Length: 341
Image (tube, rainbow, N blue to C red; front, side, top):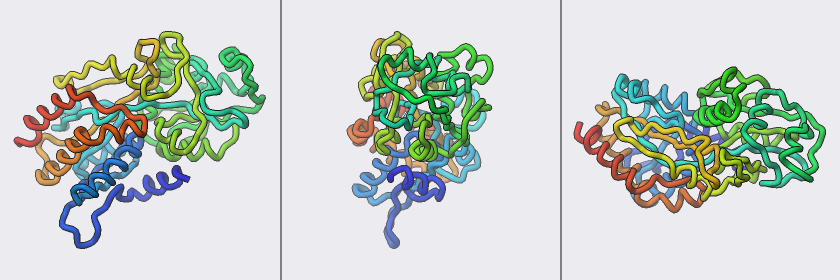
């Protein structure tokens, strides 16, 4: 199954796309978030075929990706946790969004198909708080009408590593649940009240797939590719929504990207009848004054190609391409902050 392939890739830090022995093109090296791994992999395959240049991307989590770029062991870091302008200035880095997507709650319940189950933010928070312990709890039943759910205990699965997916998921829960916001808050790593941990979106997807009556959270591409059952959600407007490209786009439409703030943006719990409540962006981190200017230039060429030619591939995996107007701002930042250093 795909999650096993992705897990092996993450743990072994293998090349997404490598250049064959004897080829002249250099590899581009990056590390970080598992959230965008499916689309980075797809882009890398296409880019290598077109240019001969490979991408070695370690899908190891946002926290580890930040550490890798800080230690200058990779040309770029990738994170779903937007970094503050003050931190970026201190580190001598810039950041920009590369793609957007949705996070979904995934479950493994006999007889329940994708979209059969409906949850809202407060109920989802209570499950991860350990307050709702069984699938036939009245709070879940109230949202699901005639759907028959078992009296079985809920097996909660969460991330064990520093995770941008966790950052955005817990950010949403902190907005949807006063108790979560006051007790647990949101971060790349939190003190989970219940459940078992797994590494990466790959690990959570694999654990849920193998555990009956479980629930976890992953980027939507992992749910789709691994044929996991996802839950629909009640959004901020009180409307039932499914995780679709249109719902992710509706949430992202509210984004006001500011290059002066290094494009800092959190997209969870956006208003709008059609908005998916757990939408997030994933970001690239690079040094303004890189040690290896040639390697940085190669990375920028790849990102520029992805913006210009990778949009359709992103949409095929239900990611949201960055709008052209924002790409123009990003290109201007490249020219002023990286390429001319």
